[in-house]
Length: 74
Image 1 (cartoon, rainbow, N blue to C red):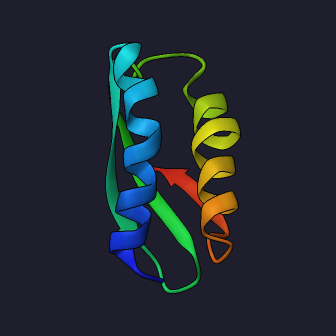
Image 2: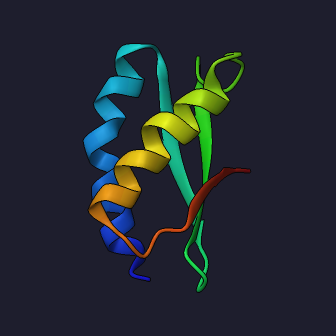
Image 3: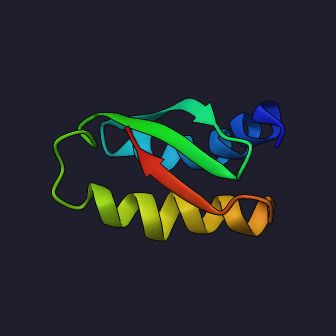
């Protein structure tokens, strides 16, 4: 999977995270379609961060890049 495509897709969701005082950093894209990210800023300690990750980031990435199987926080 192309890491640059994932990076560009994440740029589309980044403004929403930044509006709430957080951000997202791409850490790794595995060969089997797992995208590993770090939520930073206000997102890192937020109790809703898992929901943001799965319902926001993962859903958006899967819709743009069908080869994405899952998004995990590291």
